[in-house]
Each structure stands twice: as C-alpha cells, then as structure tokens.
Length: 186
Length: 133
Image (tube, rainbow over all chains, first blue to last red; front, side, top):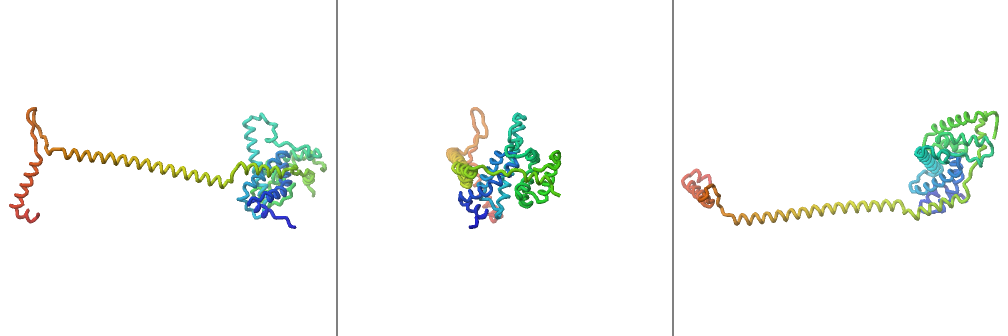
C-alpha cells in the first residue's frame, strides 16, 4: 500500500485530521531534529525548535500551498524560528551585559556527549561558530543531502546564493580545521 | 581529489528525535486548541465588536444632535410666541421727544391714514399716474 503524499496528509490535517498531522510529524521529525541540532549545536535546543516548527506548521496549515513541497516549507519555518530565537537571545544578552554569557541560548554548546572523537567535536564547534546563513546551507547540504534547489526554497534565496554560502562556509571550516588537517580522518 | 571535509561531515553523528516527540507535539497542539478558539472565529468576533462599537457611537452622536436641535427648535418657537404676544400688545406710537411735563408722540395710524388719502388724491388728479396704476 502506497503511503500518502505530503500534500494529501496536509489536506487531511487541514480538515482537522490529527492522525494525518501525526504522520507528518513522524515523517520529518528525525531529519528536522538532526538539522536543528547541528544548526543550534544543542540537542535540547534542536528538539525545542523542531517542536515549535511543527506547531507553527499546524497553525498555518490553512495557508499552506506548496504543491507537495512540504519539507522546504517546514524547514523554512524552523530556520526562521531559530533565527528569531538567536536575535532574541542576543538582545537579552546585551541587556544582561554578559551576565549570563555561559547560558546555552546565546552561544550554542557542542553536544559533546554524542561526539566520538575530538575531531568531530572540533568540527561541531567550528560549525556552530559559522554565521547562521552559512551553517544552515551547509547542514542541509552535507548532513541532510538536500539539493541546491530544495535548500534555496527552504532558505528563501537563489540556488546561486546557496552554492556561494556553502563554498564560503566550507572554506572557513577548512581554514579553522587546518591544524587537524594532516591526513587525519574521522 | 577527495575533500577531507566531506569525511568530517560523514563522521558527524545523525541525531534522532527523542521518544515521545510526536506525542509531545500533539499534546501541545491539543492544549493550544482547548485554550485558543479558532483564529477565524476570533477575527469575526473582533470585527463584529468593532462594528457594534462604531454603530453605537454613530447612533449616540445622531441622538445627541437630534436632541440639541429639538431643544433649539423649542427655544425658537417660544421666542416667536413671545414676539407675537408683545407685538399684539404694542401701541403704534413713536415718542419723538418732549420734556418732563410734555411728551411729543406720533400716532402711526394717523400717518398711514393721511398717506393713503394723499395717494388717492394723486390718483384722481393725475391721468398718467392713473394709467400707470
């Protein structure tokens, strides 16, 4: 039996079918949590943002019209929410005059418990240090394996911009990881 | 040439959602649905309230203007009545002067009467005037 498409599930969710929406959550929760965890550098934060993204998707289900392209739409919601969270955290940090500088929300902490090697931890830390627009494009491309077109749709920019962001981000990572370079493999 | 950075990425762990993630999302939605009525219903309610407030304000303003006009109308009517009464009571005399013991008065009825008589004389004696009337 063929599983229903995203568009079919969203259509059912629009008419109040909770099971259809649960199926959407089941379908995308792992990739969204993975994306948000690598983007935020924190597993807890990643789960929180992913959860909020699903809630916002449900709330905006009436206006959803992407002809079956649900994943970019959902990831766009999550990315925008994460960006606004970052901005809020920065404002808060400024207000508190660095009083809470080691609070997780402002500068994401690496999820060290998941990392097997020092190199992985280093890569994760360097990834977290990249600007969000580089980071999001790199994570979607390198970890989620999305096409440039899908990334462009999710990040609301052109494919050229996506390619440029990925190249620049990778270059920065390459420079940051240069000391570890000498043929070391994970 | 193989870029070592690709190997780094492939070595990063893939994170999965924690158990119960879906049920937490659905529970949050249920709580919000119970607490918050449908957004469209809210907008409709707010629009209806707005229309009600605007209509009430318009009606209130209209009634205030109406009662002010009615009051003004009643005042004017009273003034007219008063004027009519005073003009009926008034005698057609004009005091033109005098002193402590005497008062010179012109009787307007007399003036009108003599004026009419002089016109009648003019009409009878002047044929041009006769034809023009």
